[in-house]
Amino acid sequence: MAHIKKKRRLAIRIDMTPMVDIAFLLLIFYMSTTQFKPPEAKSVRLPSSHSQIQLPEKDKIIVTVTPDDSIFVDYIERVEKEVEGRKISTLERVYEEASPSTVGGIINQIRGKNPRALVVIKADKDVKFGTMQKIMDTMVDSYLSRFQIVTELKSERL
Image 1: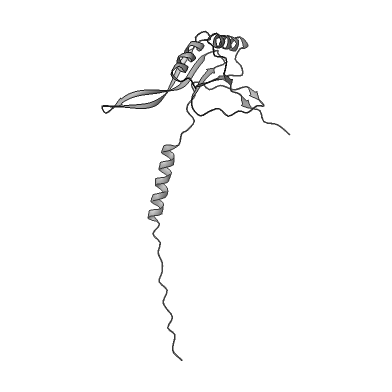
Image 2: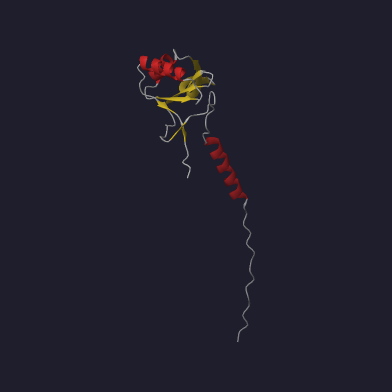
């Protein structure tokens, strides 16, 4: 009978450095390309409702009404900027302060540049009824009869 010689096992060593490098590169890529919620002109406490409709991510004009009846119009505009001698097109967030009598004209100017923009009203739940009535009357006078009012979804209690 022949003597069977056992083969010696070789230890396998896996270098994890390339995998860690790729993981960090992916992490940096996703962190730099993620779009976070844009800052609001003013934060407001929204009234509650039972309906739920998803707002579009872009092409919207946000009219914010604070409890002290201040009105801010917030929108994104495409602007041409010169960087290192070259003109580039970029998006820029614009905040404008308005009054109940001027909000319709401001919205019409913005819609002249972007006719698809949806008008969204974010009014604090403590805003006076008269202020909202003036804003809506001004919008109707400016031929802006289609708009949405943002509310907070009321949770159903069991």
